[in-house]
Structures are given as structure tokens and as C-alpha cells.
Image (cartoon, rainbow over all chains, first blue to last red; front, top):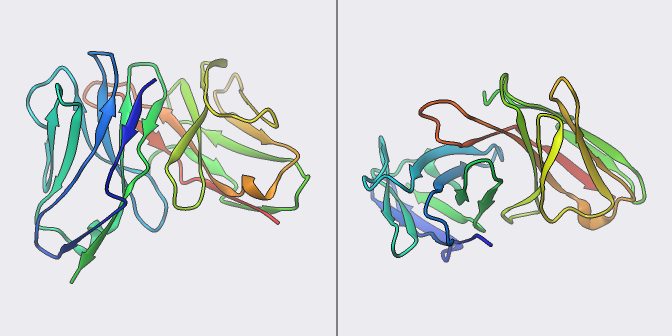
Length: 113
Length: 115
């Protein structure tokens, strides 16, 4: 069974600084997808970034980037130039084609002004 | 706007009662997924439907059931409700188009409170 582990229940960052959220996963598959979702206080689930396992290049979306280490089964999210609006729960997720998406327990990010 | 519509947004009901949550997926999406999120916890997969057929089951209680109709909307039925069933219930549909990499698009959720 695929499992996703987020070992940091809470993180905080100063506004304009950089923070990295950790995620590890367990799978025996070679073809899969990884995601980071953001859940602000509104509770809406918002896709932040995605990574295809077959791609070696790390995904980047504006201030958000990932460090994907396939052999280590690690998928961390880096947020640069943190903004107050980045404060939210962040969930790491794993999915194989056609299957359901499995989520980690989440990391609550606080941004200090 | 994710394109996934869930109704109602809030629901308060008593223990022992039965409720129905409704979801309309994004236009063109054939798969619907139901997730449960208890307070300050991660999302737990309940069940998946694809084009009207049950595709996969997660940790769904026997008191819970779901179906997907020919127009692709889905309903999640929760019966004999207990206090512990209070949670946020999400519906998601599968984005299958070039460049969107199998991400799930989520509705805004139904917050169920059992009193």
C-alpha cells in the first residue's frame, strides 16, 4: 500500500523568507504522480504543484518549487519569498493513473509578518 | 472555481439520522472521488466511481454508501449517523487533460455536524 508521510505537523516562516516542507512516500511502483495541495482557512483544496515521477527535472510554479528525489522517495516543497497568504495547511499527495489520491497528514504553515 | 459542485455546504443533523451529500463533477470528468476530513486531519479516501461504476473503496463504513448516476453526478449517503461522523466531506473529480497530470479537482466540501 502506498503511504505518504509528512513529519512536520507545524512550520513557521518569516514573511519574505524561504521555507521547506518535507514529504516522504512509500511505493513499489515506478510510474506515479506527486502533488502538493494547499488548504487555507476556507478549507478549499487548491493544487499548488505537481511532479511526474518519470521526469527528473524538478517542477516549479512561480515561488513554489519541489525537490524530488525518486530513489529516496522524497518530495519536499520549497516556498520562496513567503507571503502572508501562504499561511495554510499543506498536504503532500501521491497518485497512480486511474487510482485514488493518497494524502499525508498535513503541515500547518504559519507566516509571521 | 474548481468546476466541482457540492451541495449542501453545511448540514446539521441528529445522531441516528440519514443524510445525502451531492456532487457534480467538472464537465467532461468521468471519475468522482469522495474523501472525509475530520477536524485538523488529513483526507481519508472513501470511494471512487468511474462512469457510473464503483472503481475502488477505501475506509468507507458499511453505514455509508454512494452511487454515480448516468448524468455523472454522485451522491454519498450516510446513515445511522454518529457524533464521530462529523467532518468535512469532499468530492473530487479527475482531471484528465494534457498538462494537468492527473490532479484531482476538489469541490468546496460539505461540512457535516452531527449533534
